[in-house]
Each structure stands twice: as structure tokens, then as C-alpha cells.
Image 1 (cartoon, one colour):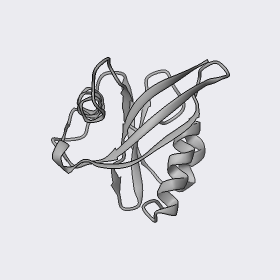
Image 2: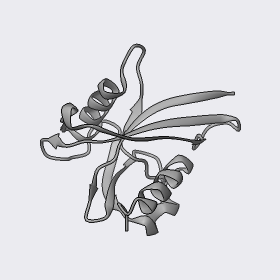
Image 3: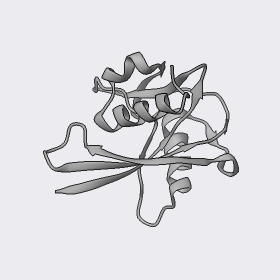
Image 4: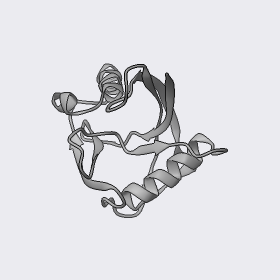
Length: 132
């Protein structure tokens, strides 16, 4: 049916990963979003994180973490999401902006509160000993 192309930021502190909840939604998502036509991964990451969390990604510090695919949360059957994930430093003070209602640091025990693709990413982070 189709694939949604997204780029996500993996920010981990004390064994927890930064997650966001959009206004009107119950599920938590890793911060990031859809690529605009012609954008590179890091251009998408920089734009989306600036819009959502009011900080600037330190692009030279970005490290590719992996690409993960699953059924797209809240979409018709057959629609998948392809999430390209990066770790990177940032400048500024984290604060929700745009459509983001709140942010939180989630541990592995919070995995059930996230989307299907985030479940796979949480499993990966746990296996890499990055998440508690």
C-alpha cells in the first residue's frame, strides 16, 4: 500500500531514550519526522528536531544507528514506516514545540506505550545495552 519515510533522533541519557507525544495522540514516538522532497537524512533530522524540540542538531556529530521498518501506527493495513535513526549531539534547551504536547525519557519498561516501529528500535537499543 505504501511506505512512510521518516528520520528519527535517538537521544539517550541514563539508559532512557527521549520520546515525544503529539497533541491529540496517546502513543509516544521517537522525535523526528517525514522527509521532504530532496532532503537528505541529516537535513530532515535537523529540520524536524528544530521544529519539534526547539534545539539544533549538531550534524557533524551524527552517527547512523540503523533503519527499522514496521506497520505504520494509525494508518491503514499494508502501510509501513521506514525509520532511519541517528544519534547526535545538540545545542539549545529541549522543549516541546509545534505539534508536540510533551516529551519524556522512556525506558524499556515503557516500550508498550510506543508505536510498532519504536518497539523494534527499543529492542535494538536494549540488545546494544543502550536502554534500561
